[in-house]
Length: 367
Image (cartoon, rainbow, N blue to C red):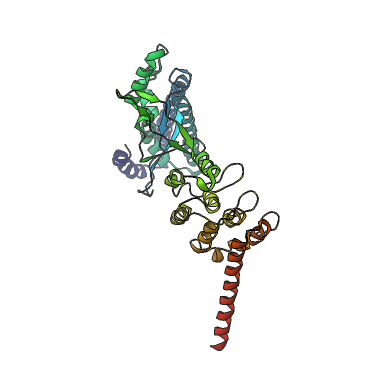
């Protein structure tokens, strides 16, 4: 539809520019046609909202669906397609409200530019493009062309499957369903938190043996932390992407790097290297003011400390200089907890940096 619209927009734009904006008859005709068309569009939007309300009250309202945002022209092609988990009812109301707001906003802007600036091109353009823009909305097109017959309350019990089948056939939001989500897709909730979709187990005849279980990215991250040094970090590391590598837990502000730097589990140094490649930030601080180096120092994670200082170049980032809410640096934390190996390592790094700076100054003086 977007490509086909160009064949209408370009000739229309050139034609609109040739209109005589000083001719009262032309202005009157444009006003009549524009406001008549926009009045019909508003009635159509109202009908779409009624259809959305009916969907939100029907037996299909709790049908779980997964919708993706409109494609972005400069999006990274290597990133997974992201889908938001919602329900038919919630999505219908949300789309209808957005359609109503955008329609009213467009009318106000075009009318305002005409009355205050005397612009008539907008009136001519929107008289023709208004209906096309409305039908470009997939839900509006579905509602105007087919109504909401598929939400008939006659469906009951086993007939719920027939409703699902009808929804799949029409795809009123361009949505996917649970059985269509693949490993190439990334699912988030309405708050943007990652949801891990586990495959359904099937019996010999293909029947579902157990319901699919879902865990949020935060839950899996905290489960990894709870496992401590014996934790299997592979499932968690597999989920890491550029979109969630700097995720922070809602309550305490913990990040994946903090946990991996402190956990001391097998494979954690490699995991930290992967986080670096995904542009993880080592300067993120939790609600206590701790960065990842504080975490490693407190939990006596030697490998985590070395990874932060070497892989992330912690000295250049000044991780060792950061003070928490109590005014303590990672070195102070290590000394307080009696983690002498880490304290010695950080102290050695600081002394090495000071010596390097002194040598640089002396070389400059000699030159």
